[in-house]
Length: 322
Image (cartoon, rainbow, N blue to C red):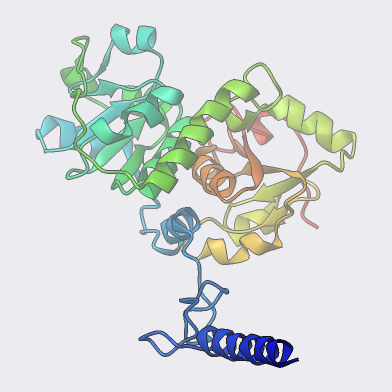
């Protein structure tokens, strides 16, 4: 009997000791879980940082008046003056070899861009050009998100640079190369997103949305078929949208602060983005895709400029004003 009483008392003592130990606080005055239960130890919710989303939103929120572009004539003047700049020609190597802007480095559109990020100097403004400016717009957006000061050359090589008076003075065929050592540090989360972005181009190759773009004819066919898997987004100015736009399109004018309206866009449809010539649509598409939207740009944009033969209007496709 005494033995049983002793065991009961011993068990009770052990339970008291265990309860006291569980209630012991650490040096910070909490219960020892250091905030692992979802707060910061002070019962305040932890705000998780999303580096990529913050960088994309900052790209639009801090947009300068030149909307990350430079006029083709102003660009050529900088080259002639020998300014300390970095120039990326993202056209294909065979075209680059036929002639390019003096000092331009060939980083062909595609995974070569994400593979080369760390080798691109970040202490100078980076100017990017392609054929007509549309894919350069995408590239410039991704470069700025990665931390570079990058701008695209208006209308690219074919419609812009090659038309500048006296441009032949700064055209060469000599190949220019990036260094082989890393000179720029890229945030790991952003680098992973950009690797995925450019790898995704291969998945779109040969499809309606190759290069994250869609032709005027293919877009028109989707509109005519009333395909509910796509929506049209105009990023032209409000007054131009009112004067004529693609039927069913909504309008978020391109410019500083436009990211505040992205939450009005569907996440379960393909967003066909168009502007005037495709260039700012390219910037928008890159930002939207990095934010998780399935966005593509309309080839040539609305195409109502004389020196931009591509585009919706230049194909004779209708617009509405409602």
